[in-house]
Image (tube, rainbow, N blue to C red; front, side, top):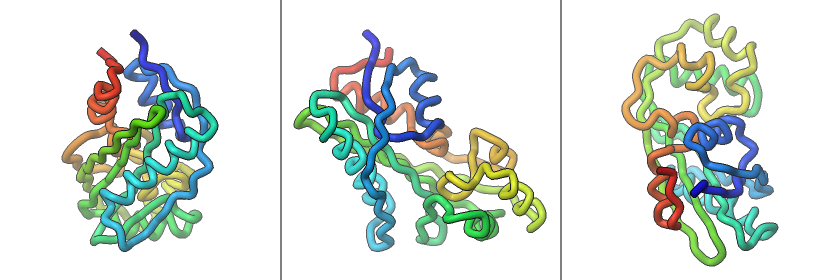
Length: 190
């Protein structure tokens, strides 16, 4: 049986990941405003944002299975979301370069009155970079809509020196975690 759901995200990366494991989906971007509350632990922040996105879409599609997700990067207890522009992306990369940081992704599945949330953390080390390398990467535009200002699945893969944990989590959706949550809703990918 094919798993079908609504994706409460416009992220092309999440669409690619769902397609990779054969999940049929329809994109229904959420109007939920992501919170970036530094007082919340990142694990709680990402699941709250993921659930908020899914519940927002549920208002328009109450009987559907809905997937919400949220990703942040944390370094030195500071949360890095998407950059506000090129200068912010350069700043983030300048701080992350040569360092280990943690990528947190929260997932929420909602169907009628049931919901489940979970999160996954993956450690990533970016290579040391010169200011010119950072500027060139930022100028290409790739980091401008990514948490932490890099795309491990794109040119940013060349920035990643090491990874400890789930690769798809860094892309924006932990596939093993999603498969486990789908099973709780009696949906099987395999």
